[in-house]
Length: 299
Image 1 (tube, one colour):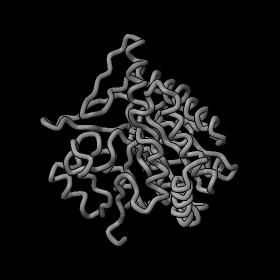
Image 2 (tube, helix red, strand yellow):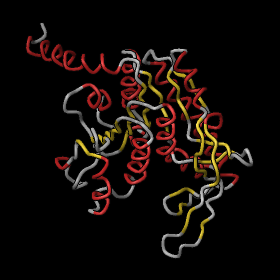
Image 3 (cartoon, rainbow, N blue to C red):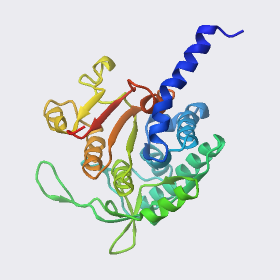
């Protein structure tokens, strides 16, 4: 017979989650699906996040998934004899590269995520970013010389066709969206930043939550010490943390896009470790959470 303490502990977890389930029913959450767990060879590891997303949907939360896939793109390029090139942290995307990007994101990764969700009993709806986003060519400048850099087919999202997403939600499905956009002037596919794509979707839907699955527990004052995790952060504190060097590297575009989403009407933005088992549920349905949340100064 199972230990009575363990049984009551499980009941306590459910009771703790109950008010959050009641509060969030009918709300929209956008999940940026990315991180090291996506490349783990163990399907159980990849399936855990799908299980969490399926749980959210099962308790009445409208979940929208926007995924990345940078590592898979680099692997596909290498197989095709193409060398990945980055400038200012952005992938240079010529005609051949954008074809690979489109295939990997729209066909391979999107399909895999939908299959993982389906295996957990969720009804996923694959949506090509080409049908959701329009963009303009992203202009980037060299940080040292200030000269303009041509990144090729790299776009800056300027519109989200939210009707298609809302239709999928109304049909009881989980939209799974790739970060590809169509150029507004040339109707050519463009590679876009998945973090920004997720923030754009969250803003367009006026989502209650935007959750980024990361490779780290959240924002930490010392990246080597998880004990320095910052669990709660107000929007006005972001600038100082950048100056202090707390927000650097790969977290910068995530935080910047999260800030944009908050300013656009999203209630809260979360950064959690996608590799940690059930981190999504722990962040959303427990009092203490597990990662970092950013809120408006007035909250």
